[in-house]
Length: 233
Image 1 (cartoon, rainbow, N blue to C red):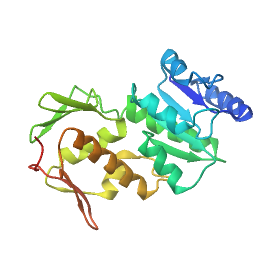
Image 2 (image 1 turned 30 degrees about the horizontal axis):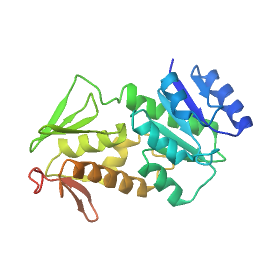
Image 3 (image 1 turned 180 degrees about the vertical axis):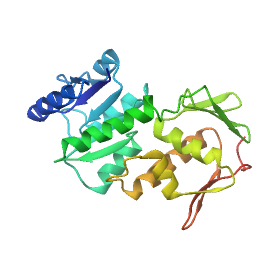
Image 4 (image 1 turned 180 degrees about the horizontal axis):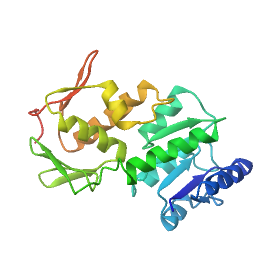
């Protein structure tokens, strides 16, 4: 049974979500003490997180960053804040998707199922311990890690899917449509700007390995990972 961690201070909404998720045989856990969100997360060990932005004391962006420091499990923001910048901030802080309130419960369910499939099910990246290599850079598909020599960094599931697609087609252009199709099989309500945010996040993570200029934007077409980039060492 998949466990869902709910960080939401609207008691009525939490009750409705709990009932709805249990109906579909998920195990929900709703946070009550918002001072110890990370402790509760680590104790519950969920498969996925539903997280609001407006919370007591610390906002959802803060807790998203704290969770990301120790886990790559999918994080879905569920918030009444519908400005594009709120969605961008959620993604930049480590979220995998963003749902605005009021929402259709069936949409939430579809998003949850989609993320669970990618993280743990038929679309999961952890198949057969695969590794992809380009110019000394190694993507450990099972561990969601990028390695260069003795250095390594962790990726989220979504970041890993983007890197995997680009590395598999090194020196070839991967269209934006292909990346969106690869990442979101339910493409409903996906803002094209979301992909820009993820590409930026991937580039920043590559930069921590001293890899610069590996992912090129091909205007009007998509993105390309160079098989031989400069400044990687």
